[in-house]
Image (cartoon, rainbow, N blue to C red; front, side):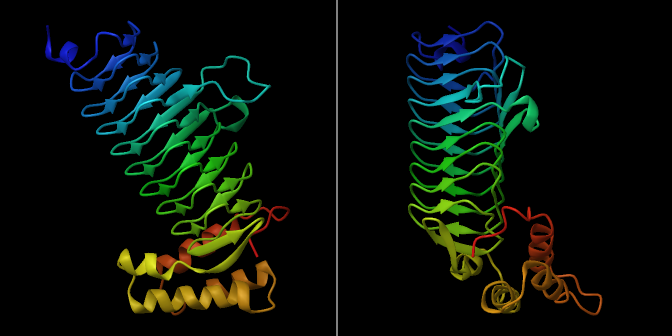
Length: 267
C-alpha cells in the first residue's frame, strides 16, 4: 500500500480523474468528484461530498459532513462548467455548503486564505470571500455577495444577494444585511444598522492611534453628520491631504465609490 493510499479510507470514493496530492487525507465514506483538485497537507473528514470543478489549496482542514462544489441553487443554471476555488490554510467546520459559480456571475465562487468558517455556513453561487475572515455558525450568504479581508460575521448573519461587506467590518448575531457594510463598521439588527466601528479589532491588527483617529473621523462623516453619501465621500477623500495617502482612507474611499445607489450602505 502506498503512502497516499494509506491516507485515504478504503470506504471513500475517489473519481479516477480527481487530482489529490499524496499527502491529502480523506475520511470514511467521503466522495471526491472527477474534476476536483486538492493540494498538499489538506484533509477531508468523513461523509463529505466534494464535486464539480472544485480546486482546494494547501493545508485546509475540512470537517465531516460538508458539501462543496454542488451546482448553484439557480434555476437558470444549465450545466455550464463553473468553479469553486478555495485557497490555503482554511478551516471549514461541519455541515457547510459551498456552491460553484454561475455563468451570469463570473462563473466562480472563490474563498481566499486563512478563513475560519464554522458549522452550517452557506456560500451561494459567485460569492467572493477574502482572507482572514471568521464566519460564525449558520452565517448565510446569497448569490454574488462579496466579503473583504478580516470580516467577522456573527452567528446567524444573513446577507442579501449582491451585498458587499468591507474589510475589517463586523456583524452582530442575527444581523440581516440588505445594504453594503463599509470597511471598519460594526452592524447590528434586522435590518442591520451601523452601530460603531470595529476599533478593538483594528487595535489587535496593529492599527496605530493615528489610523484609528482617521477611522473615527470617517465614522462621523458617514453617520454623525447630515451629509449624503457623495458629500461624505468627498470629505473622506480629503483626509488624504498634502500628498499623503493613508491606506485606511483609500480603503474606505474605494469602497464607497463603488456602492450601488439603489442598495446603499447600512445606516
